[in-house]
Image (cartoon, rainbow, N blue to C red; front, side, top):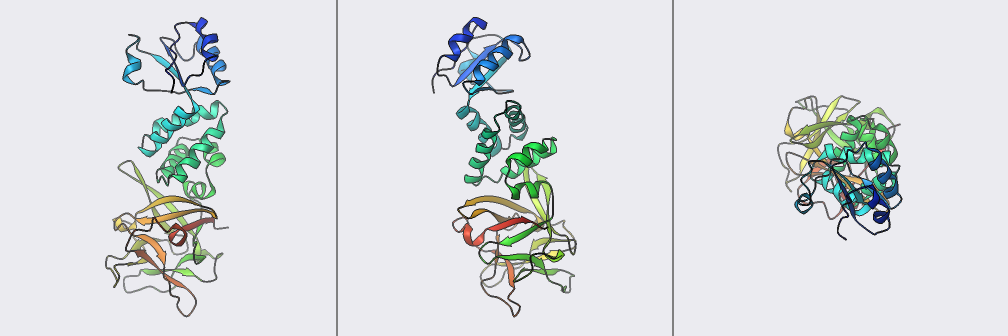
Length: 308
């Protein structure tokens, strides 16, 4: 990256916009001033955009004793900064910068950032969407995020479909002695209330997790405390949701056939899968897998579609 340009006055503007630079820093002028507005318009044509609340590196704090500055960054620097904000959980700054990009009518940069987060399998992309939504920026979520993230963020009813076997999750019509219901993949049903679910956000130590609610029975998905022969755990629906076994981490994965999610239990570190065998109805039990699933998202991935 070339060295940043630090103009001392408005007469430097013409020189700045005719040089290839990665960053422009102005000291001692408020962002609302006419000089900054003029500079911002000129720099935007070079895709050098205003970055609110930019923290100067140490070497840029030396040239001046002024306690205020305005920074303009090129596309790559802004994208890298935003990616870092999301991946490290600095969501307030990510929201502020994203809103600034929208105001500058460069929504394509938001699209590119989200695509980069998805391809990096960054779980914090869900928290990023949730923070934008909570801040009232519904249009950003609706315009730029993929459908599965929009559905989850807006807490709409969804179908959770195992990609490999193409079966939608449901709960058993019968209960056990604890009034819990086994979870299954249904061989045929993709429309009834039994396959309707919601993701309920739960913030914990600046991390976004989810409870997964079956809307037919108002029961929450969890993994069994006990393991089976291969170390896997059965998945159940329960009336209560106060155990850590009810919390789930979502990881996005981009496949050639479309986006899927890996759904990992926060307590046990096991990701959901459907049984390789079927019962007499063609249904498959839902399990937590004993082992890493990152290398095979085509098998362990889940498709999230609108319920209706």
